[in-house]
Length: 333
Ligand SMILES: Nc1ncnc2c1ncn2[C@@H]1O[C@H](COP(=O)(O)OP(=O)(O)OP(=O)(O)O)[C@@H](O)[C@H]1O
Ligand SMILES: [Mg+2]
Image (tube, rainbow, N blue to C red):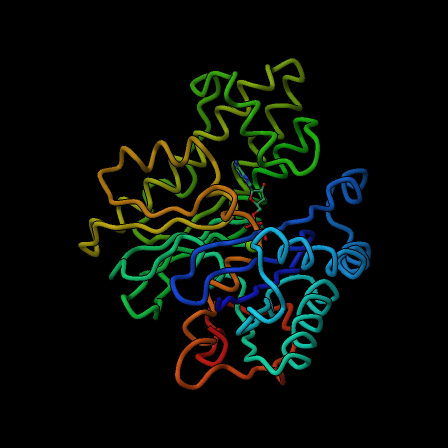
């Protein structure tokens, strides 16, 4: 058996996944959340996140081996996220993975976290497509070529889509992490109750903006503290979904593309998935459990580089907390 291990500790989830080196299928995907640790603070406390990664990464790896029925001897390559993310958190997973690769004499690939998100949708063989990455830290629209090269079309000018979900959830008094909680509450609400102004209405480009919408929700709650939370959540969610899908559909028309890949934590959102389903586009999505941060997607992103004729050897590559998409070098894709 030939298997790859992927590690992601970019934020507050300790992710260790094992995929088949031949076809990239996911054999184990262990994600240890730290919600109880950060919940009382309403957001991630970086130092605590690093310490928990350190405490739990061995356990996550042991579980992944067990879940996938693998032994150490089955591993033929190791990959880890190098950035972007919290530097202390990144360092734990990256150093741990380098140690494993070095000790076992295996190829090692350092991966850009967003390449992991894209790979989570199993994009091999999909051809030229639009690609939206919508996560806690990024909202990025790209044209992805069949060979994996990508050209940015637009990005959020302020808050990322997931960040807006989290902040509005907090304003509504929902527990951390907010996005999924808000989506659950929205199911019981009326999305027409509060017609928020669509962000960047009438723009000809492909950017996004969610901070004005977030402020609109805050203002509404200030003026009308009795506003039904489920209705506010549903109206907010619909506005975000329309903004994302509207911009995707326009870009698809403008560039003559019929396929869109949507990845990142917000790709787990059911309303977004429904709206994409009726957009007339071919939609490529990760399974919801692979949409949010995990290790398997990092192994998927590195598979070609770990199993090719000249396997990656990135032991010298350092953690990079600030690693814009544009700075993603060929050596670390
Ligand atoms: N069902 C959902 N509906 C809306 N948002 C969601 C849902 N599930 C997760 N999210 C959001 O996705 C984000 C987490 O996704 P992900 O783990 O990809 O982001 P991240 O790792 O924090 O950021 P980045 O990948 O940009 O570094 C959070 O902001 C969360 O609120
Ligand atoms: Mg992420």
